Image 1 (tube, rainbow, N blue to C red):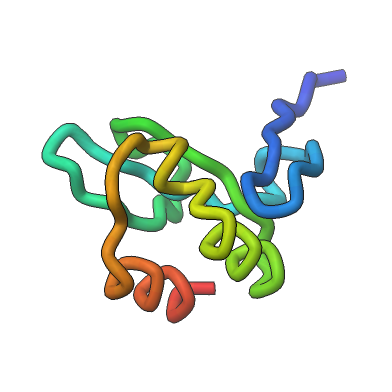
Image 2: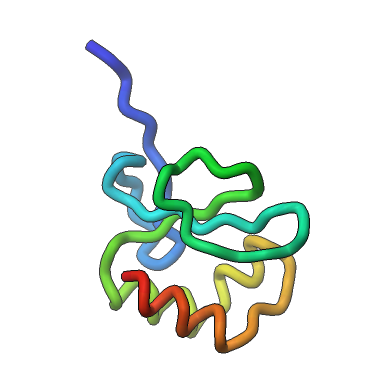
Length: 83
């Protein structure tokens, strides 16, 4: 039986299967985007595919601390649109 990788959601802090989560990536140029393939180069963070986890992540600024960068409201709006 193949081992399924586990990742922690940065919104609710629950450990889930990697396939069930959405990957958010910060690349070398500092661009932040949703990685649909799960294979893009860069630092990745994972979040559940629900708006509650996204709102909790925004409220606690967890993504900013993970990527060690200030994130503009436009990026959060873009993430909301892709959920």
